[in-house]
Structure formats: structure tokens, C-alpha cells
Amino acid sequence: MPFTDAQCHDHFSRAFFKSCQTRDESSRANLSVFVAMGVAHTRFYQKYSDRIAQTRRELGIGLFWVRTGGEVTLEEEWRY
Image 1 (cartoon, helix red, strand yellow):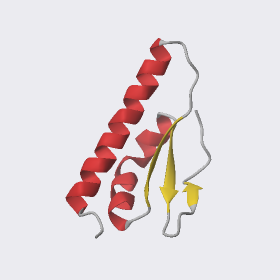
Image 2 (cartoon, one colour):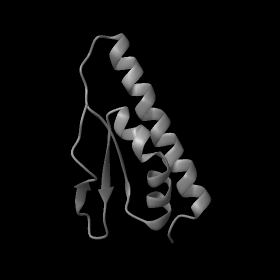
Image 3 (cartoon, one colour):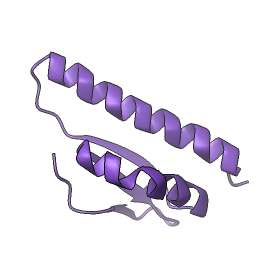
Image 4 (tube, helix red, strand yellow):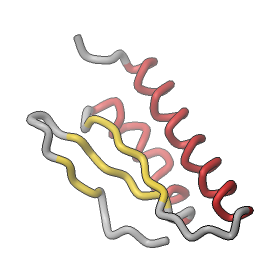
């Protein structure tokens, strides 16, 4: 059974928060890391991705889409 819109909002929000937290922790530890999120490519996740796309890119947080059948793609060129 697919996730509901509310579940996708919760998952996406938590993944974005964890990505921001990881960036902060690595910065404080003087570590250079790549931070990314990975979610299923569904209309609900796409909706939430679209709403924060510019900020996510400015923060250097990558986004991997997991498609039906297991194909994984990076949304765009990853800048960090």
C-alpha cells in the first residue's frame, strides 16, 4: 500500500531536517561530507521536493529518487 500525502510529508520533512543536522555536525567537526536525501519518486514526494528545491540546492543537499523497479537517479548536478 502506498504512503499517504501526510506520511510523505512527515518522511520528507524528517529527511530534510536530518540532512541539515548532518551538515551542521560535519561542519562543527571540520569534516567535508556530501549530504543527500533519498526518497521514492512519487507525486507526493515530488510535491514536497518542489517546495524546497531552491533552498535544498543552496544548502548543497543532494536528492536521490528511487523509482519503481529500483532505479536510482540524482535529481540534478550535485553542488556542495
